[in-house]
Length: 107
Image (cartoon, rainbow, N blue to C red; front, side, top):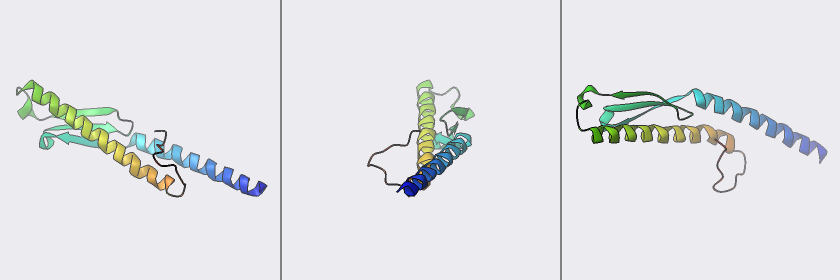
């Protein structure tokens, strides 16, 4: 029994280290969200920090409300891509562990 507990603790420590490494990798990754068929693009990190917004010249001077909507849509697209990227990356860690339904990882 004592040996099983020690083995479980080692496994938990290994998973914790792997999760930390995965978090660091995700923070460095970038995704590109877009809207308006690519007229507005947003580059976002895995930490959901916007690094760059590009707006096609054809939109400058057009309807301001439309431009604001396109920027918001591009940011939302990037946020959804970051969430999907994190889910895919973390599924490798959770595949061997029984997790309660609806359990969210802490990041």
